[in-house]
Image 1: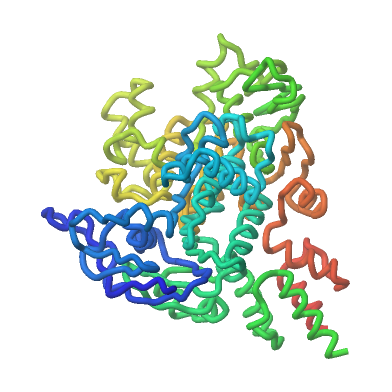
Image 2: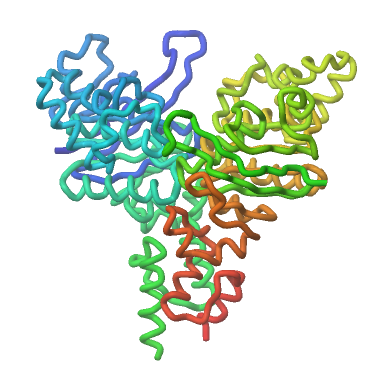
Length: 287
Length: 274
C-alpha cells in the first residue's frame, strides 16, 4: 500500500497574527515497504512532515493517505485515529524521555494494552519486541530509569514495536548512542524492513542514509526538493549546497580518489566495506 | 601544577548492590592546559565522572584533587569558582529570557557591578560569535547557538577547568561543527584552560591532546589520538569505532594494502595509485 502526500501544507498558529509556514506543497508517493530517509537542515520541516502521517498534526491544506486512512484538514475528530496510530508508529527524538512505567515490561506492554489487547497478549507482544531490540529477560522487572542511555532508547523503541506498526517513523534514533549501539539499532530497522515493515527515518547522519536507505527525501525551508536514490543524491553538489547538507565522508573520499584518476563504480559504494571491496576488485583487475 | 588528579574513585548509584558500581577504582590526572577527550560506550561511567568532578555527586571512595586542592565540603565552593560545565541538552541549561540575561546569570551571582557586566557580556558573546543575538529569546536560537551561549556564560567565569559533557550530542552537523570550531579556538586562546570533553563522536576526540577510554568504570586505555586509535580491535571489542578518516585506512590495511591509519588522506591515496 502506498504512503501518499497530496499537496500538503502545514502552518503553525495558522489563525494567529503570526502564522508560520512549516511545510509547503509536499507531494510524493512511496510504495510499501520502503526504507526512506528524510534529510534537511534543522528547521526544514522534517518533524512537521512526519507528524502529519499519524495525525499528531493535521494538514492545513491537502491530504495524506496512509494505507486505508486519510488525514486531511477537517477539524472533525478522526474515528479511526487509534488504528491509524497503530498502523503508523512514531518514535520521537530522545525517545527515552517518554519512558514512564515502573518496570521495563510494563512500559513496553502499555502500547498494546492501550490498543485494547488483553493483558496476556500485550505482555507476549512486549516480550517479543524487547527480544528484538536485544533487551535480556533479567531486565524486564527493572525500572526503565535504572538502565543506561542506550538501553533506555532500545526499550522506548520496543514500546513502539510491540504495537506492530506497518510504518515505523523514527526521528534521529541513534543520536547519543555509542557506535555499537547505533549500529545495532540500525541493523534492527533494516531487518524489520526486509520483513515487510516500512521505515521512515529522519537523520542528520548521511552515512546512515547512504548505507541503509532505498530512497531519500530532501527538504529545504519547508519544501520538498525531491525524492532520490541515496547513491545519486550525494553526488549532486548543487542540490546539496541548496539544502545545506554535507555529503557523507565516504562520498568525499570517492570524489577525491576520482580526481586522482581512479574510476570507481559509484553504485557499488555504500559503506567502508563495499568501498574496500571495490578498491580490491579494481587493483586485482590492474594486476 | 596538575589541574586534575583523580585517585582510586569508586561510585555507585545504589550503594547496597556491589555489582552496580559505576566507577571502579578509576584514576587519572591531567596537567593544566591539557585537553582530554573521554570516550566509552553508553553506561561506562563518563557522565558520572563529570558530575563527580563538579561535586554534583559524591564519591563512595577515593579522592579528587582540583588545582592541587582536595575536593571536599569545605573546598567545594572555592573550587566551583574555577570549574565550568556544559551539559548535553541545550534547552535544559538556558535560564535567561534573552541571550544577554543568560550570560549575565553567573555574573549576577558573583555580584559584578552592572556597568562592568555589560562589557563582560559583550566580550564573551563575541568570543562565541553570538554578539548580534544579545536580545534574542532562546526559542529563536538553534541548538548550536544555545550551546554557544552556555559556553559564553561559563567562560565569563574564567574557569581554569572546562567540562563539556556530550555538549554536541543533541546538535545537528552544523551545530556540532560550530562547537568543535569554538573548542579549537578556546584551546588556542586560553592555553592555561584545561578542557575535558565527553563524546560519542570519534571525530571530536581526534581534536584533543589525549584520549582516555572508559569502560565499565575503569580506564581501559589512554594515549594520544594516534596511539588510542591504533588499537582498532580493542576499541571495537567494547563497542567503539575509529573516526572515519582512520577507519577506511585501517580497513584497507586489513585487506592487505600497505597503508597505516596514521597516514594523511593524500599519502594513502598516493599509495593506492601505485
